[in-house]
Length: 492
RNA sequence: GUCCCCAUCGUCUAGCCAGGUCCAGGACACCGGCCUUUCACGCCGGCGACACGAGUUCAAAUCUCGUUGGGGACGCCA
Image (cartoon, rainbow, N blue to C red; front, side):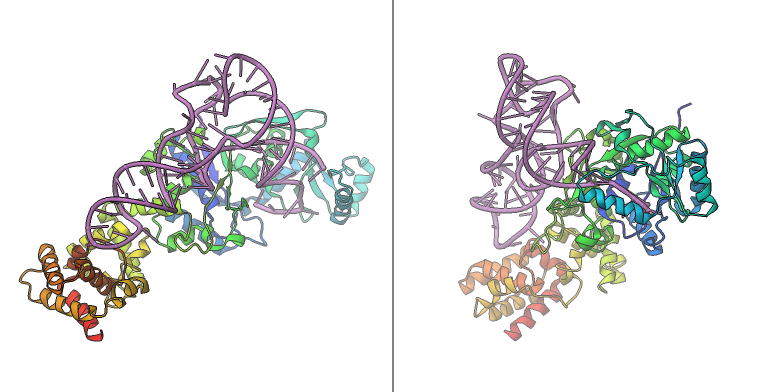
């Protein structure tokens, strides 16, 4: 019987889900799907000081939104504290760990001295060398102690085969006897994480490269416990354009998943973008359905070099990485329109632009209109921004086209008033007729048709860009077009 | 200070493991042209990279060593 493949995503709930964490979750999820494995969500909430309920909710909400589902959990690390402590005591009994009575102050002093002298600091094993009598005396006096893992002696080393980075070796001498239980009796990450992974029978660990340094120490714990060591895969990190690690603290909202949810991203587009940050398929395919991505995914395609999340603060055109935007636009413009409609509904509802008729009497109009205007849109929120003019009579006038297409022409008010009349007397308000009439009028007035056409676009939509004008006119509808033109003409 | 990792266009990357088909391919961005009534639509084109230095070899982006640069870890955080 083949042994079960099990993975986990273990966020610590000290903030919102950020794109780096999401990327880790996505890779674990893809690997799990690909190998028919079990994915576990485990909340590592043992840092009581910083863990919050809001953060847990935010992380779960973010994962749900992205469509990343898990098979077990969420489990909470804090539920297993006793097991972690028991394990530490087992390690003492088996000679793999020992009590250390050194005070934090004494240790800090030693460390500072070493740093000042530019000497590498490592715990000097003072307490390992304690005689049985001294130990007993310390214990009788109830001197607080931490539990340290005893790294094997000699010039051996820990070696493991990372699925991404290859063979990694770390000599015992380079590893100090690390603390696994605090003096207040609570366990530390290195220990808890391993104990939980053993209990959860985790076989594959996919995590950030910042965990690479922990791996040799964790392997030592697995070995001391006689537990099978999982397969490790470390992945490159996501950096900002200055090559600093991204964090909510220094980068703000742009690095949170929530931000993309609020700014009109399609969840799958974000997944698609994120997965390409540090991974590539064997082909040069860039857009994937979920099935295709699971099929294509392989650790082989992981890039060892860190990648940059290329967003420029205050960029006039791109509010996040341009590639993310272009991937989102691609999905927005090509996805089945019936799938897009409810998402647009949601955006319009949030802006109080929704009309229930869009799902009944005006359904055909609604569908054809969003299909028409989406070709220029990049994010869902565009439907309520530049797209607002289709759903409301109150819309912004972009000053640029106003200047270029209206203000520049003294008599434009009169001309557009005339055009409105022609539209009014048209037996049939369709594409051919509206265009014919507009061109005829331009001819009579001896002006270029573009003047009338661009002026109309500006008045009717407030925008410089958009679909073909005569399609736009039909979408907005005869009555509203005429009313808007007349209103402008009267003001002009 | 110690240890670990990495290095191809501005960005994401292909190619590297099995050296020649690579004066290095794709995508996004940028620039130009075309189309057009407009445009962050579409089409066509352009710009643009093997960090550096040695070595191995008939041949190196690909293998080796070094240099430089970058990142990460060294906590009674996770």
